[in-house]
Image (cartoon, rainbow, N blue to C red; front, side, top):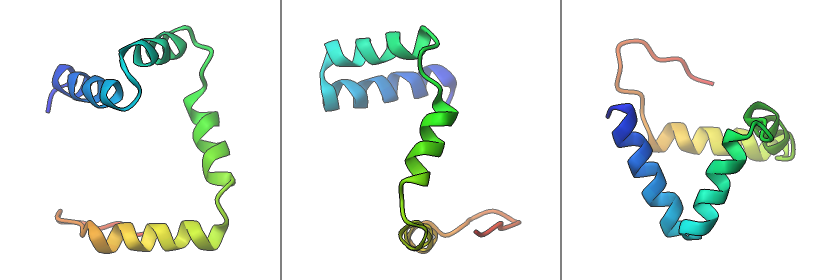
Length: 74
């Protein structure tokens, strides 16, 4: 999927989830530089207890087996 198709798909999902106005506000927030995605992700994952995060990773790996030649597992 190319970048334009991905952006369109993501925008559709965002609009369905929060509505067009909130989706546009979110895009504006991201573009202004007020949002630090790396910090947000770090804060998000730091708030999850380690054993719960480990269980989520195991479940994801079980539900989404690697299909490539070389597997890297957490």
